[in-house]
Image (cartoon, rainbow over all chains, first blue to last red):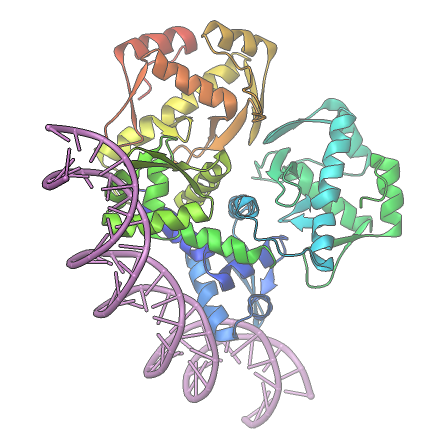
Length: 230
Length: 230
DNA sequence: GGAACGCTTCGGCGACGGCCGAAGTGTTTC
DNA sequence: GAAACACTTCGGCCGTCGCCGAAGCGTTCC
């Protein structure tokens, strides 16, 4: 009860279509401007401004001023996790099936989830790492083995924590499309960043979906033994 | 966006004070009647009935008819996890400090979280198991060691999964009061059940809070090395 | 069988909150 | 310095949804 009040407040903030669309758009971990978020949520700039004020007052999003733009991003990984968990519940719900369009298909194939990889590609990488004994996952957690540490080093990933960053190396996150846990935490984020740096994946315009490049296909095959993910 | 719509629907359902109070009341894993839930949420029976219809249509709660009563319970552990995650986000929020009353204090000390233990007691047990090498936890996951398996057997706990139950043995759940992960999953649930069976803990009336009994204090000391948890 | 009980459905009231047009503030560009 | 731009604030409109009284259905108790 005591916490029920603020539980309702937080949920009510996410429970508006426009705000939910904004938060979904921010789930890829990027920071977006107020106008971009207005476009994503399908409302006018004034309305978006009001929504964003509420979201940032409640510490769901954080804002950075830069010139005449204001960049909004999710305030913390906890917020991202809460939204992802809600999406998982939503996808369990009554089977109100929307036929899966091509864009939806792209999302299921590969996408970013806050700061790490999700979709079939995310699952495939987590599976490969597990099969090779590089990580050990239980349903909602994980640990990096010594061989695993050497392996990610060989990919050019440095897991030394930044100052004051105590985030866990290896976490899992429930994938709403595959309904299985994929790799999150510092390791998940570092892998995702590295794959962008190597040019293995690219963002699909106006979407959290990702496209695997030609070099990416080769790299994924050599490093993880992953064939065409879809 | 595609899933954003139903994300908003789910969140909006939780985002009403009355419904949030109902769900909070169900977080201890018990099934409550419609009238009990009406009382918990502070609305009339008619209103509660309407709310419960919405919640069960969206598969957030499940209902069992029994005579002239209808027992409502959370539909799945995923729903419980979503609510707990939202509570964690809520407790991070702006510092709108309510002075902690005695009931609140009892909640922080020991309570049930869906089907497992939380609060200082839950943390203490998780810490003890970790310190003795019985379980290994990373921030959001965990594994039971072989010695751990023998230990819980010695407490009279059988972790053989029920038919068709593939729930993970060892998971973690972020504690909103302690802000640290405590023990969930099949192991967390089994420990909780066993402690009720042994008479170590008892429910405090009309609350998720728990009281540790005299035998409980002795048992906790002998089995886990836990002194007076508060 | 009738009364008490638990729960739901219906109908109408009222308020909260989302929405946009218009106008205002601060920043960049030329 | 003026114009263009990004964003916010204000004010008023309107729809949605939560609320309860009254009434209806099914179960249990005596």
